[in-house]
Length: 169
Image (cartoon, rainbow, N blue to C red):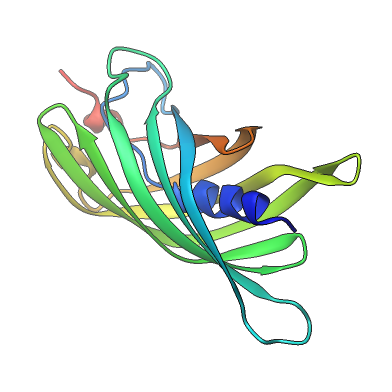
């Protein structure tokens, strides 16, 4: 698997966290994320396991809060095309609010097209360990996430079961 694909997977999985200020009527929130950096570490395992760490930034995909964003770091373990997220921490910033999200669990798989890696799809759960200001309603909340590749170096992060209480007034 190519480092860029692994980065996409990690970003996707670690991009688990989201901003509460997206103003959509349903309980789904979407972000467009960019991979800012990635590191690949061989584990020395003869089976070819690798650890990938990924740094990424995300912005609200649409709506009134387009300037809200996420900065994150994730670490995942890969065995061929299957990945497991080991850790992820995200900082969410919104108008008058900040929150910290932590990965609870996540898995990923890389996709190929014409025998080349095209990106990573991931899913899992994360919890908000801290939230204040306009994001205070997220404190202690758990949400589900999924990611899908958009372009090389970009992915979409989607949160489900976003708490309605976290809607801005």
